Amino acid sequence: MTIETIAESLNMSVGSVFTIMTEDLKKKKLCARFVPHTLTTEQKEHRIAFSEDLIAAADEDPNFLKTIVTRDESWCLEYDPETKRQSSE
Image (cartoon, rainbow, N blue to C red):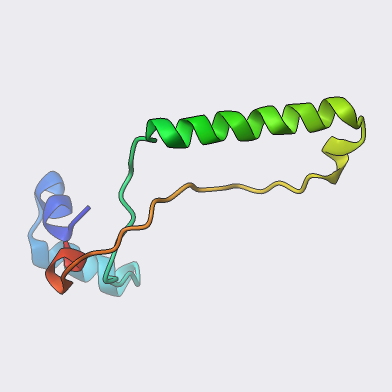
């Protein structure tokens, strides 16, 4: 989401939003960003296969689930902008 989009949705000036983001919230602009996406068919199939492998391993060894370490996870696709302008969008 760009500063312009935020400013428009809040009915504020771009300058005000920029000041709040940078000075009050201590946020800074990076060269690239993560974009929400829908999983491809291949990615969905990979998740299904991985899940089936986990189920099979758990069926073979009753203590298998005790060996798994979990944490919150975010799935992100790599975004490689072709130009500096694309990276700032």
